[in-house]
Length: 292
Figure 1 (tube, helix red, strand yellow):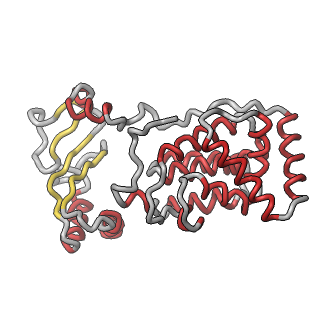
Figure 2 (cartoon, helix red, strand yellow):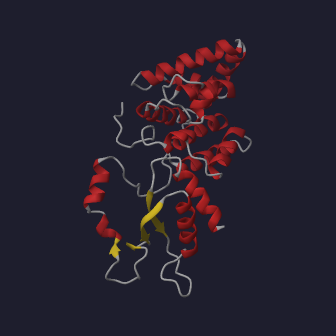
Figure 3 (tube, rainbow, N blue to C red):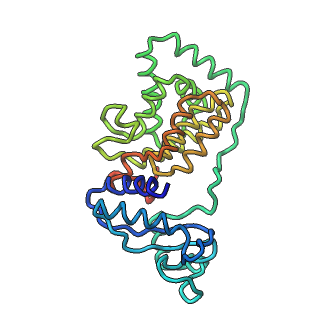
């Protein structure tokens, strides 16, 4: 088990061909095994060996509990443990805040309440019938035009346009086209969706899309919510926020347990697949964005 974990971590790290060393942090409240100074010694030993085979050295380790932080390889003792509360006012934490990289106090999703008005659900069904009456290529083009206009306009759309957008997202072939429109990249859609483009995405545009879709959710009836929630989750995966992505996908499956795209995406996260953009610092998501 430890070797499998170590190989998985090594596979992530070696995507950066210039990486030659790491610093790890172990977050746990578990006690060490008898005769060990720190917990998970076997895991760290396996990781050290596998990384050494790849030419990567572990330069330091940090041991973090719910109350304190200390060096991993130093014998435990009150003289080396630093209370976590003191790190809130450290220079490093101040720099993280300045650069827009902070840890949220809770991992709980904060979604705005959906109105669940019957007239909204009826309007979406009406738009779906209109979409079905048009040739698929024409319907996809119309959805693309509506969505890209929203992405390029720095104001929230009208409720009627939002309801049309919800209807377009109900069709998988149109949904995929709309998702590929989000990063603002002119490359094949399949490469965009799997974050494997040669061009860096427009992260401010992606964040704006997430805000638009969160607003869209407020007008979405439960029977139409799964595609919207799944897309927000997928954006979180693009951004490297796997736990958030998983939560959105679970919400999507709560509304529609049979929604295949949400289930497949959640399986992808469970397999440890990282969005390609986040394996390269020039294309990875950064938090200090110039938001619209």
